[in-house]
Every structure is written in structure tokens, then in C-alpha cells.
Length: 192
Image 1 (cartoon, rainbow, N blue to C red):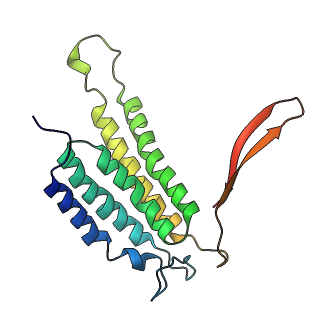
Image 2: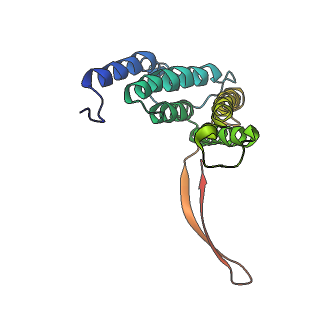
Image 3: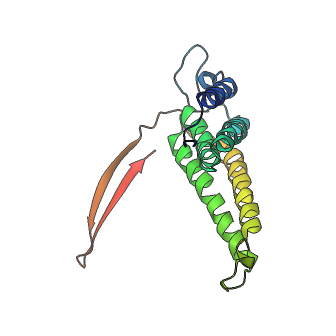
């Protein structure tokens, strides 16, 4: 009987591949030469190629190897969803990282729902003949959502120019608001 754990050799190979692909670039991504502290991108060049590379190499290749080894789609989806946001954070833009994460999670989900809706499957009749109706459309539109997320992230978020070189200190706090009619709302506010 096989357990759900990965063999040690598989995990070691995947970690080595990830370190080989992404390890040498990590200190260089957002640091001044000779330092290891991230800096905002102020020269106007942006870093779209790093976003595309992170999504492809870190997300799809490393995550794909893990997904094949575990026979589960979760590793590829998780590593791909976190690759680009990590690039933004390393460059000193945690707010862009949060937006990137929303894009990378939201657009593929929207694509899957759109694909299922456009499939125009018949109502459930109880037989298994239509069990996979809409699966192809859901996968195609999900992949389209992934490609769109990477493209928008690289073209927009990776190209955004900083207005000033000042450092923004992330902060957040709860907020309680009481309306005139007695309505009470609780929210969380923050700056990134």
C-alpha cells in the first residue's frame, strides 16, 4: 500500500530544481548591488520578464513536477499563484503582490465558471453520458484565465512606476463605524 507522502528522492529533486531555477536570482531580484535589501523599482524599466519567468519556471515547472509526483493539481496551482506575488514583494511592492495574488487566484476561477456556463450542458438526467460535459470548456477557460493573469501582471503591475522613492510602511488596523441610523460595521483598513 502506498502512502500519500512523496518519496524523499522526488522531493529532493524538486527542491534542487527550484533552487537551481530561482535560487541564484532571488538575491538579485530586488536588491542594490552588494546588498540584500529590496528596493522599489525607480528606474522605470519594471520587471515584467521576471514575472513571466517566475510564473513559468517556478509555478508551472516546479509545481508541475510536484503535481505529477503527487497526482494532484494543488501544487501547480499553489506555486503558480504565489510565484508572481513573491517577485513583487522581493522588489519592495507588497501591495502589488496582493493585487497579483488576487489576479492569479481570481481570473482562473472566473475562467472556469465562464467555461462551464458557456458549455451549455443539458440538465442532469441521471445517466453518466453527460458526466464530463463542460470539462473541456472549464479547463480551456481556466488556462485562459491563468495566461491573462500573467499577462496583466507583467504588462501592468510589473511596469508600474513608483511616484516617489519613499518607503511605504505596511500597516493595518480594525475600524468600527456607527451610522446615523444605528448600523454598526466592522472593517479592516490598511496601507500597503
